[in-house]
Image (cartoon, rainbow, N blue to C red; front, side, top):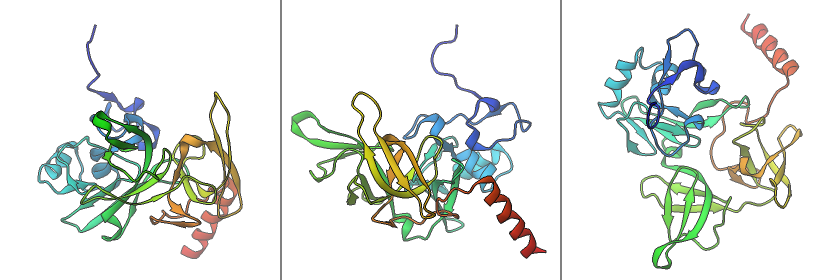
Amino acid sequence: MARGLKKHLKRLNAPRHWMLDKLGGAFAPKPSPGPHKERECLPLAVILRNRLKYALTYREVNAIVMQRLIAVDAKIRTDKTFPAGFMDVISIAKTDENFRLLYDTKGRFTLHRITPDEAKYKLCRVRAQRVGDRGIPYIVTNDGRTIRYPDPVIKVNDTVKIDLETGKVVEHIRFDIGNICMVTGGRNRGRVGVMEHRERHKGSFDICHVKDAAGHQFATRLTNVFLVGQGAKPWVSLPKGRGIKLSIVDEMRKARAAAKTAA
């Protein structure tokens, strides 16, 4: 019997949103333990090799990261399987590029290119609020940060804006109706809209009703809702499509229109 955690990950067992072809090898990069869960992250190897195409092989990925060229949330990372997750900022100094990991409307990670000014901060969701040893209050965010002595106004499910250089909270968004949010789990992952209503269910999951910019309404669990702005204005730039999910027919029409303009 094997003891301990598995050190390998078969390619067929890798998360579907990594979009790895099944004939490209037997194995996939297993994410290292880190701030994001194994099924909710994108390892640096997949980002550099499969998404950005800066490397052709795993060995080339290792050569890039060992030159200390890749920073995640303003910290140099030399681990080729470091797990980058939702809202993380990936910076490549040599090419002067900055990306934010967001979801598209099909629930897949997308590397959204951002400006150097926007790369100085990130948004985090407050997962827990506690009082530790010696009565020191602290909050825990979705990316594993522990922030001591937060503003007493900040509560669980709120969103905090963090300065990546100092690691301190700059502003926060109260979890309230009328604020714009992105869904980070479930069938509606990647959709963006304004939170309209919250249903409370004791002993079960609270449900939030969201309305997107096209007027479509949908519902999801409260734990899947991540506020990204105050009112209808987001604090981070959104990927192409701005979180509006298209039906199969609408997608087909859009593809035909794009083909006509290209011809």
